[in-house]
Image 1 (cartoon, rainbow, N blue to C red):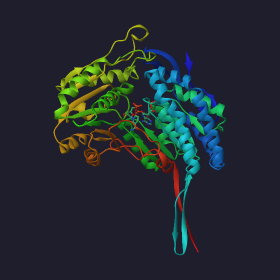
Image 2: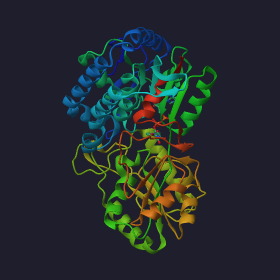
Image 3: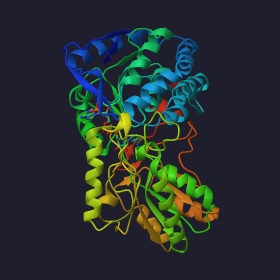
Length: 479
Ligand code: NDP
């Protein structure tokens, strides 16, 4: 049985209270590791270590921080295959996906933010009788709380900018997928990251997550996860005036006009619907197709979706692996029952998938396409976060803009058309933080990323991350 440990003050240690949680492999349903169930006592140790480390880390020359973090990036690349294996085993995603997407982004996140930090300059405002210099200073001890769907990818997406600008970090990965953050802790030690600069605490949201949001020593909380948890965190941090950002759930529209590049749209729509078993906050779970193309699209899409192989994440031809946990599996199956009871017509899938051999007890779901549901039903209003999409036809741009905007969410949207004017006009109307035209999940790390409405507050990426993880101070000089 593998044992995950907390990483505090440069050392891997057991939780003070001696409490542990089981961690299972979603593809087999077998427990394979134990995870610390940390509490306030572990957090106090980590915050004390981070406060002490901040005195040095925030004041060393930027080149020194960059050297250390780039060493860590190199180690992540060198250990990529071990990280791939752990991420896939812990999360259920196909290994090839972790190899192609999740793990390369870890080193890329670190390198992107170190190179940005090296060239970052802030503003100066000249007056006729003096000038203003706007300083952006590291804040102190900051916390990052990240989810299970892209475990190390999102963990490093937050930790890298926070460290690059001189903060010290308490990182809490999801207790459901702790393995790669644990391995990353070992690489931090090997890279020579000074003790206390990054501390990784494991445990569930109710114990350690809550303790983090309440702790007086923590000045900032950067959260990615579900909307309900985000709402709780916002309420918790408000009285203490912690700075916070929330990257939350989505119910993203994928709008397809009849004049689109059909093959490109179809291949990408299969990915945006089912990649990572539909457990990407950016997946397009509501597909709207222009009337003239609808029948062709439906028959083709359903035919191709039904052929996607659901299987052992270790096999290269598996397109969908396991969903992340027994609890999440049950939640998705329950959503499918609700969709049926709401009158949805299941065109393919609609239930659990069975995979034989070592995976017979795993948590698998068939790729599912549902037709005939109105906008205002639970299936179209709430995030399922599984391989489940609804399809519907539309006639006009105004109609589809209303459909696209007709949920409490506003994270991302895709628009498929050969007419750029149509694409831009619709993009301007859509209420979401990200709109992709003729593509999906194309990410330039310099661009702002985040959601509107109940999909979040604040933006990450590029200088937005740096502005979030620093305190702004204007120094005014009068001649
Ligand atoms: P959760 O909201 O359940 O959990 C996210 C993180 O918050 C986990 O580390 C969790 O810990 C922790 N947590 C839970 N309760 C609390 C609490 N009361 N106080 C502090 N921390 C807490 O989300 P999931 O892990 O289920 O992730 C899926 C969700 O994340 C989806 O809704 C998805 O859309 C969203 N997401 C959004 C993204 C975006 O960029 N907008 C990107 C990726 C995902 P633990 O798991 O250990 O309980």
